[in-house]
Length: 276
Image (tube, rainbow, N blue to C red; front, top):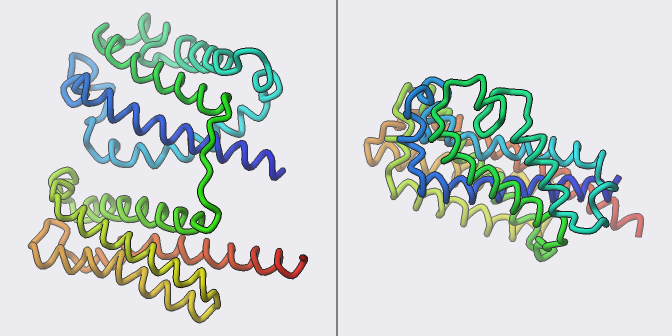
């Protein structure tokens, strides 16, 4: 079970990272903002940089986990065989892209049954094929992705904070009926986010050295002030579109996830120490 979980974890990380990097590169190269408005593509695709574009990378974590669970079923047929990356890429490209049952871009069904322009198929295919290829090489050629053991909790907590910070902003913008992209165009807002994440990292270091229920409560308060308090104050000072008391609710949501993770990890660490 532990081996399977590590396998799914690696698949999830590799899929999420390659999806994000390839998406960023090819969206810039082929101008997805205008490509998604090309002909009938505008009725098929949402705005490239709208709400879905911001939530999409986060959704890849779920996709990666499902993909990992599915690949467990055929792991023995690929891993340990000659050219495993080519075998896996063949499966992903053949079944997942070219021969998929849906009338999706780059697929045979999409070319035959959809009204998407040929240019749309041609310009989206490099990202899809490159992402699946880089993913296949990563997960089959034993490319390591090991975090220093003492910083593993820091990375996970900061990642939860970063994802929650972004999603909280999107949810707040939707609740206030504000323009998501306009509200996300302020460069100094990212400075506030970076500062908040730095506080999360430092506070996690302190908790790692002094773990206890009392200190966990203190940490959660500090996390809340950093992730919810700071952006709320900044929004009001700059008269932002997101200036609202609701920011204290939406931006504080990741603190719940962080608190649960730290509590569970501390309990697991405690029982492991007792067993030894």
